[in-house]
Image (cartoon, rainbow, N blue to C red; front, side, top):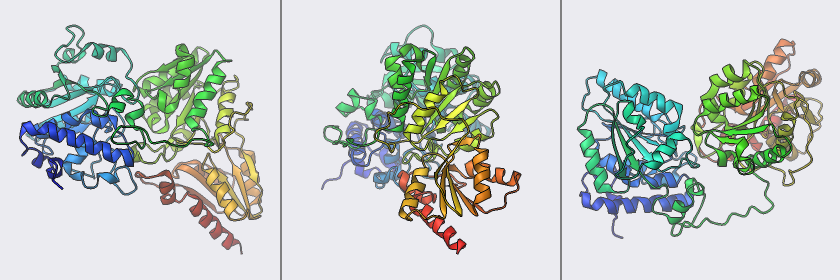
Length: 595
């Protein structure tokens, strides 16, 4: 079988040996390779297809890895990975012990900065450029590639603002395709929309106002033009800005037509892009959809309900409220800090504000949660989607830390539903007028457990847990949906009379009455959570036991004190010892100690 051009490219050194007129053929082969792998292995598709030519041009013109290339977020870095020595193991992308779906410093010297969250590239590349200047490396190039959704983030503005008053040898490339995961929003997007290849609006060029030399817009799929432009930019010192127009999903018709769905489409036919059928009949709904649909149901009767999301209307399912009540639902773009303080401002005016945000992204607004919400004791409701292990996106996206980083904040209430009916009922309870403090509701990625979830609403008593099963010697205390693993473990152990199971529901405040009952009547106790053990819910229980002079042994199960890599949720639960088999082994060990 004849070799393709791509087969000969094991590094950018090989790439630079190829004649420029052959690069369009290489681009076609690279695009086909990405499509064929992602079609069967799954992953992020549209973003990488959109920057194939740009990726080739960057590695062709710049002397990577000596010249430093930083990708923002990293959804678009598949082509980069393939031509920097990872073609042969690209089929392991996002799989357990395989390569990461995002740039990762310990994976390759070409991955100059680890990413997964947006809007970090400008600050990182500027930091590298200033460091190079201090080392006397005046010829070294530093390139940040950032999308039009990411550049609207506050952190990107901060980096631009600083870079504009330096002499840093920095090139910022705006990959403008008018979409992040969902379509881009905001005033900057409206300005960029006016720009087109060969035409830049004459007025209101914010980038030039910040002292950047502005070039473009250029066609991001015209390799000849890209090569010529980048070669010229290499020779210009100081901060430079190149505006590149691309099409997300380029080269796969269906991905171009439905850019939201084909951001990460699941499995599909590589020849046509047709999604492979996935039988959802009789499967429970996803937690995000239970949230989104329940919020619409509540908003129909409560005109005070507001929904806010930072650029995740589809991922969080706030899209349902945006469709039903567009005047009361806001996508604020990639701006988590703004989302939280916007919610706080609305709460001061008597509105019931649901801020739908992934657990891992709320980390980016930690000061706002403390200073703008909790300190003022405003009853903002944080709906923390993707809490716990999220699977193949890995360490940058796991919701590992929210319990630990929220439970130390005064006034904060933290609720973890056992199932989607619990989630629905807490959403209802939160808008009844009885909530007087900030509330975080944490729930996992993926499908729930109950097919018939749309039951009549019931109020939940704040700070109260419940006994699911009585026992005589060992008490299992679970927090959230991980309790389903404990239930299954007990079923497989034939429901031993010695073991009781308690669904604590609230991490803060803990149900002190229930804890006194458990600690007084059992000989051993085990807590289970899908967050980090250090500072987590189990730690809270141990603190309570110590404060009240209980001395029984307490075992805490949860995520270890290290960053968890990517893999299927079940695989990662097994590695973290919170899967059904590990819980059974723990309980069997405890049962043996009773004999």
